[in-house]
Length: 335
Ligand code: AHM
Ligand code: MG
Image: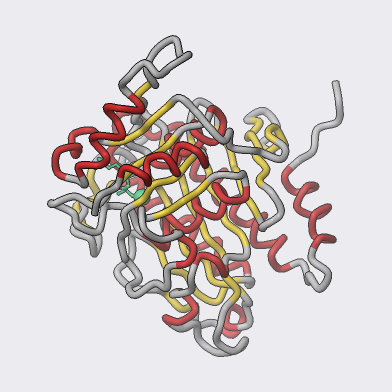
């Protein structure tokens, strides 16, 4: 058996890629891994424990009902960031406002983290894959002061690192610091994330499309045409049409497309003109990973990572996945 590389070893080895690195980003990534192991443990046992499944009884600022595990995961990550010392503030999909950490210790942190603690809320209670998504920026405000809204509202192009954790049939952590994408599988027997998917590349072309097709008649008619003509037709030389696969957990749909090639679509609809997915917590981090793996992420009109955010909980239409598939879908858009 060849030597196993743990996430921790990998992060420490890669620290040398950043000439002036002081180790804070490495520690932050390690903290995220630790928090996600705790969340993974909770997710794995949720059905057996009191107070883990079901609605929390609250709604978030977006009017969505919060699940108990959403809140548990949110608190787990926030506590880790508060006590780590690398982070001066956070913004989370589950909190109305951003949260500056006011201790002297945290105020000296260089970074802010924006995250969706548990994505795919509608799948929590039914034992279907869910995930965590995170995005790390260097703060804009001065070290030693309180984190500001401006620290949170940076374009995706300024991300220092981003990643996701997929609580699927195994737990995986996938991240980038802008030098490719690497994936680690949690070995439950030793409790370590181990390198299992080095240098991940998204195939340029795939045969899977993922969209909530319930929305197909309330979005840009070009999307329906694209799906009918390119996804649901037997194209020349192909044995069958593409496969439609929609898990309804962005992390899981994205991860499958990363490995097999595919397109994920959540467009603007007449009901949700800005789309459903959040720029800062979902779209930017996965766009960074997609691009680092050779894929594309766009609103249909603009590169996701070029958007200057206007609101913390801003939503945007989202097309992400294999380069050629996304490019082809864009040719159909009318709006
Ligand atoms: P959430 O963050 O509240 O879980 O919402 C985001 C999720 C994505 O994971 C998923 O792709 C999408 O919402 C599913 O939405 P829909 O049920 O409208 O298809
Ligand atoms: Mg989400």
